[in-house]
Image (cartoon, rainbow, N blue to C red; front, top):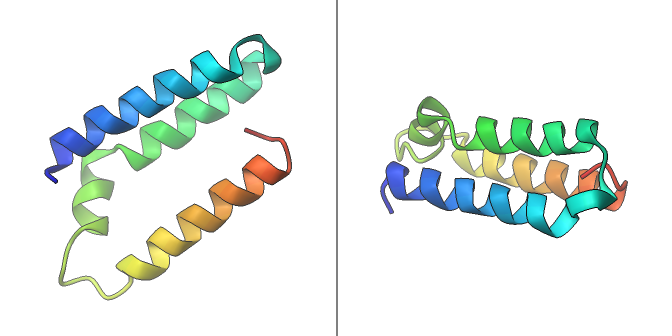
Length: 77
């Protein structure tokens, strides 16, 4: 999957997240969603994470998944 496709998929997920959460979240929580998706869809971040020469990629992906899960369980996103 090329990074541009991944960026489009992230954008679509971001839009869906806003639609699903709708009025249940305040502006601050919607801003957090935007922050998270802006970060993970950043071109440089995507290039780094999917760089087959970087040894820490698996750890980064695991940490992202863990952090997103924690935020969701705590009701922050």
